[in-house]
Image (cartoon, rainbow, N blue to C red):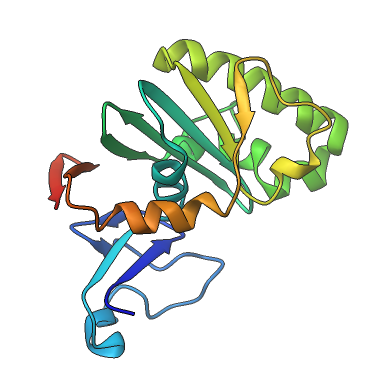
Length: 182
């Protein structure tokens, strides 16, 4: 291999993990990936990588239904990793608490699926999305895909990793900063 693309399960700022994810343990923030691989490395949020691999055109919102809630907006080749899981769903719960693995276990498949359908409808309106892609490990647990959405695949993350290195620039927005990847 000549280069390495890493989809990181947490926020990425300036091409580096912004913190250690709760479910993966510590050591990610200060790790020297290029030294370890001895190759050029690009790190992007894992949901953003899958979204980038799923993107075709227009305004696309990606929601990753997994351990948590991954989320990314892509608009005309600008990739904006989001943290929608941190938004309040109710006074006591976040979107991640409801739509992630904990929510599925707590309320059961039927109520979880209802919450996914409601969230997709609300977020499609809020982001004026042309397309909604549902990815992540739990998307297979939906008995039907919400209106206006389509099922993604974790395999699209590979395509996203390849697209990070393409010659045509892709802009990745990162918390008040724009990183131009060429």
